[in-house]
Image 1 (cartoon, rainbow, N blue to C red):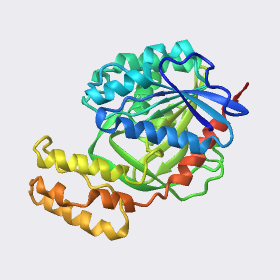
Image 2 (cartoon, rainbow, N blue to C red):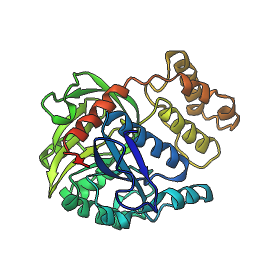
Image 3 (cartoon, one colour):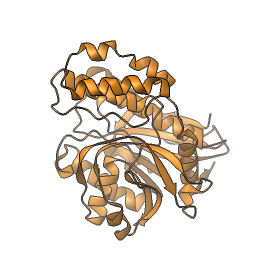
Image 4 (spheres, rainbow, N blue to C red):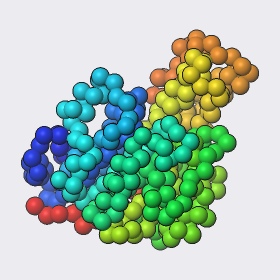
Length: 322
């Protein structure tokens, strides 16, 4: 198989016989328990789909500071290593997922110091880093002194994108394309350009999606969108947020993700959203809505875009020969 997972206790080089050439990749999964396994699957599936006949050897890591339940802890103990151990098996590629924000200031997140150390180490020791959402905002703060700003409402949905046809990461793509976004914060595209980043994908509606520049010895790719998402990911997040709202765990009415469902389900979702906005907070609203069936019917118009984006990213790093 092109994708090979290295368990926490595996020895270096143990799984390098699966393909003619290979990259080694460190995946740092910083997502809370509710989406931990789904996030792992999304990134691994996208790497697998993008690697062609070549092999990507993946080691998985987590950071301290994110509370874990028993089920996730068992999975981490069996399959993951501590992020502090990445230097022991220096990878060609580093992916750091986003994370659900807990604090208003990114520097107050419980894993901040460890994340800063990882980014600084990666900039001098990894050929390319792909940093998703909150991790992308962290990189802008660490490397460029550019702060994120909080949005008035969550940016969530599938949005049209314009691509720069000379950017190496968007080679083979033609405008317009679409990508999902799901975030509470942003960094203006003007600030990103002023910091020296090359914008590869941008949306008039929600700002930049993919940018890159060389930092130290690494080519750093910041992804403010979520190309790794599966068709039902936005609906799953909406269901979670609606449940929190009707149970009184959050005060604000959740935002309905734009174009997150098939046309046959969209009107029903809009009706649910209006009931929430009119003040209904009955948990039965969540139980009665066919979220799973709607998720099964949700379209996936960004899949080929995501696969091309990751294939281009891999192509920019010379793989090792066995």
